[in-house]
Length: 413
Image 1 (tube, helix red, strand yellow):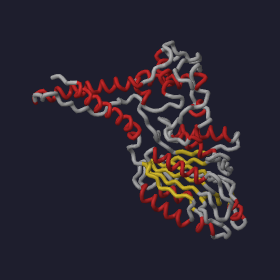
Image 2 (cartoon, rainbow, N blue to C red):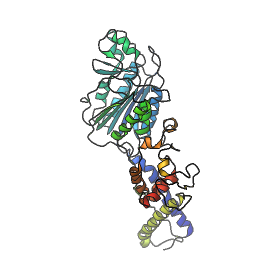
Image 3 (cartoon, helix red, strand yellow):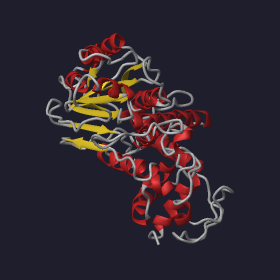
């Protein structure tokens, strides 16, 4: 049975549509597990000077987590009653989740080794104020530990806190900064990350986000990066951004590798099987199955060929060497070597949807810790599955990925 041009085009369109759907499903598949997050940010304190960044930090984190497949319960500039109501909502929603996450930005303090978060109406003028006006971190951790598999806690709450000084006058052992925290109540598979080391203060930052939140936003959803490795990168970024004055503190009892953004670079782009296009002038029912299979195979191949046509060509067919200038065919990067470019600044966001203020002006090797060996591994993926260069935008553009594939084919020299 033969197909006319109209039927062939219909098959191609159907197969290409499936291919594009697969591109969208690649990221979605990484979030098949149930994820629930509580995000709180307090800045407009009624009894202390307002903070610049916590609400922006929390709002950006809420959006980031939604894109990573989290159901997000959030609240900004909440009073104590509003905070309690939000935590109750989260407690109901988080039960049975695969991953439970808590992010807080704002004022916090420690009293006798216990950590507390401060709603915007906290005054802390009396000895009895603590329980009535503050929120125990342990109480939130207990709520997120009920029938959940993995718990992640991020506290950007170590800022210099005048309310802690007020409370210290009536209660011994009250101070800014947070205390080293046991995760026994959280059980196994828990990670707790503070913006600063125990008993130390964190910077609110002069930019749009605090140093800790900016680094966390950059790395928490990095493709195929475990949360443990992401926090190593966050620590490195914060230390660099504060000239060594602030170092995040991380404690973990995770027993499995937790990756929030899984992307299979070698996954097939075609999912399912394209339906057989109708034969011109009808067909014999006995041939329908065989014809459908053949049409599906042809459609798959046509879709792949169509995608390959979208891969841009480099400006030259010359061999690609790591430290030699490359003619990419892109004026923004032409004449520079791979070695030079990975130490430069990105042209596009390294993580889809990341706010421009977080990545613009950063250096690529600092964000990705690229070196020749690690880049070669990535390049081999592009060489083995050529259409993967179209799957996700690269910080240096698609033509850079094409050059990497050719570089790998030449032995990553």
